[in-house]
Length: 350
Image (cartoon, rainbow, N blue to C red; front, side, top):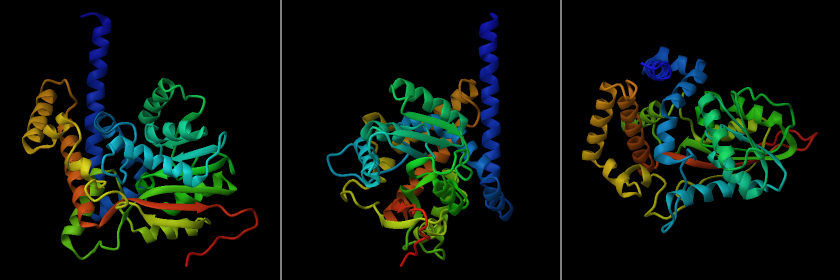
């Protein structure tokens, strides 16, 4: 066997083994026990890093480069709704050409690139997953945006930037991965200039959520397990964390139902747009995909455990859709906050 071919096969086996180990580690952290719940908070970094090692490739293939949801209007494609949702943040932040902006939890940088091009700003993104940074830098180069978009590996609860480095900041469905949002927001506050604005969309339980309702609790747990979350919190907790971090809250509102009723934010999870997507989303299509993935694992074309990850994401998608339909969960709790000018104290929320 040629040396180069042998090296490729050796690397493929090593990658497959690493994928399987990562899956086992992730499953251990997501067990439903008091010990595992404590570990999810103390080892949140490993939890999130493992999760995105497992799912980033599948996310990009099936969802694109913007890993989030958006309220949607009739006649609007899913892609169009995502871009509009991102541009809305840029407008509410009042971004102007040349500003330095922080993307808190940037993934592979889809929103970063859309906002950088739309507002002609410089965006720096932080994500805990090294693989996402590698992919994101490649995407930046292909989009000819490397001079405007930078990405670093780091923990957004300990941002590797100097104080007062940014003119604005945004977070899109990212800080739900943190066990303590106030620590994230305190770090964002630290690296922003006085008077700078911070906006984002948060994953939250709504007022409809009932912790005594077994169905609600079961759906909450499925969403957490399938999305690398320590624990979902309420919208009030997000506001409290912003205030405790020193921000002045300018506006908060839930945008989950801001679109048209016939195109709810969760519709793509149950009714994909493409013909192929619709087939694969059907029950026979899901069975076919599961069997095909299992065969690829058996033939060692795909890493062992890939079918489990597919099943995990499917169950999580169904839980998200049902939670959205029941109104107990929102992926689009919007906030706009501001770091007070020097000398001003934290504002209270009435």
